[in-house]
Amino acid sequence: MNSLIEHEALWRAGIFVVLLTAFAIWELAAPARRTGIPRVIRWGNNFAMVVLDALILRLLFPILAVGVAELATRNGWGLFPALGVSGAFAVIAGVLLLDLAIYGQHVMFHKVPVLWRLHRMHHADPHFDVSTALRFHPVEIVLSMAIKMAVVLAIGLMPLAVVLFEILLSGTALFNHSNARLPRAIEPIVRSFVVTPDMHRVHHSDIRAETDSNYGFCLPWWDRLFGTYTAQPRRGHAGMGIGIGRYGSRRDQWLDRLLVQPFRSGK
Image (cartoon, rainbow, N blue to C red; front, side, top):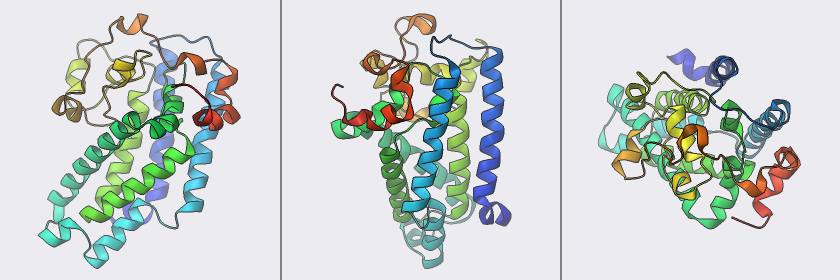
């Protein structure tokens, strides 16, 4: 486990590449939906966005969430150290609390108009596939990291909990954004433990009531607990619309237009 902490960036990058490749092959082999926009346009610009996001994070933050966790653990900062919570329970509870925090943050980015302007760039993707998981505005990524670091510090999470959560979050985001479907017999079972592509696809519906549901990225339990769960889209997965129509053209998928989209008019 010490090796995982010491080389967390390499571990995360390696696991990310493996999972991204696996889910891309899955959806290429058996796509759930077709798109009229060439994959090279969407994938090229969505991948460019995640590279830009990573560079900006490294420039703005001398340490990220794992570094904050190391400081909190070393100095005994936060709720868990104050309560004497440690060991395996602290790791498991830490992962659960971080996932709950991400759920809450996601709801906030939908409900607060200025934050929705940032987050809608993710939703304006006219197609839904593994590359959509990479498509977040840099300002949203910076705010998200600041919130995550504040949560880590306030709770006093252990570095291991943060590393495991980051790997789990990125892996499940790639999985549940995949343009693929699990077999009908097992999808409800898997959905009981993790957000599936069918569950998260509803969140990318062009019907706002459906967009404002199924906020979970990793665990599906929070949506059921807080009443934001929608089981299936009204028009079915084959008939539902994806994205935000006014930002769905080919030109709107280029990096320059994605970056200025929050400053354009419309909801």
